[in-house]
Length: 430
Image (cartoon, rainbow, N blue to C red; front, top):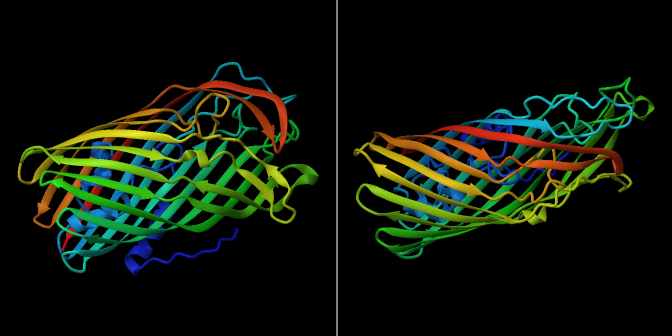
C-alpha cells in the first residue's frame, strides 16, 4: 500500500498519541453514517449536546476552536478514552442462495468492542490569542460477520478508520466575539473483504481491498456571548477528498488468484453545527445543538485497476444528507461535583432497504446519557460518562453483485443494533 503522507505531529507527546490512536481505534461509528461522534470523553455524559458552544476543556479544539479563548491562561490538556460496545445481529427474512452455494447462517455477532482515544492541547499566548492541536479518530466503521454468513458474497468484513491531526488557532475579537480555525491532516485506511462464489469446493475464496491515503481539510468556528449567561457557537468542518490507493487481492480462487494495484475515490462529508450554552442559575446549565452532515457526497465506492482504470467493483450506498439534534443539562451538586445528562436523535443517511448494506447497516438512532465531572484539584478534573444508543430496527432487500456482475441472489432481513459507551477524560491546566 502507499500513501502521500503530508501530516506530522507538532511535538513528541502528540506523535506518540497519534500512533496510539491509529493502533487502538477499531472505528465503530456511533454518529450517523460512519462518522465517529466520540471526539472526547466529557461529551458522552450529555450525548454531545451543544458541543460547539460548551468550551469546558481543550477538546473544544475539535468541536469549535473559538472555544479555546474560554480556557484559562497557560496550558490546557485533555486526554480521553471511550470503550464502545456495539451489538449487531442479522435476522434472515427470506434470502435465497446463490446458485449451488449453501445459503449460510446469520453471521453471528457483527459488532464488537472498540477503544476510541482522543487528546488535545491548548496554550494561551496572551488573553486574546490561543493555539492548540487535537488528535482523534473522526470516521470509521468495523463490521465482522462469519465466513459462512449468508450475505458473505455481498461483504462480510469492513474496517474503515480515519485519524485526524488538527492544529488550530483562536482569537478573542472583543468581549462578545471569538473566532477560530484549524487545519485537518487526515489519514484514512480501509480493509474491505467479501467471499467469492468460485466453487463450493473453495468456500474461503475471497476478494480483499486494502488501501489508504492522507489528505487535508479545514474547520472554522465562532462563539458569541449573547448575554453574560448565554453563548452561541457556530462550527463548520470541510469535505475531504481521498484517493485511496492499495491492492485488491484474490485468494484461494484457482488460476485467478493474484494481486491488482487498485484505487478508490471517496469524499468524507462536511458538517455544520449551531449550538447554545445557557447558564440558567448558579447550579443549572443547559445546552443544545443542531448539526447537519453532507452525506450526499458519498454515493458509491468506485474501485478501479490502478494500471488500466478498469472498474473492479462499485457498491452503491446512495447516502442522503443527515442531521442530529441534542439537548443536555448539568447540575452543580457541590463545588467539586457536577452531574450531567443528555438526549439526542441522529437521522441516518440511509433512506431505504435497497440501499442499506450488510457491512454498514445504518439506521436512525436515539441517545440517552448520564455522567459527571469531579474536580480533583483546583487545576485538574476528571469526567466520566455513559450512553446507550437505541437503533431503529430496519431491514435490507439488496441484490448481490460480484465485481460488476449482478447475480440472482437477494438478501432480505432485519438488523438488531444497539451500543453502549463508557468514557473517561482527564483535564489539566498549568
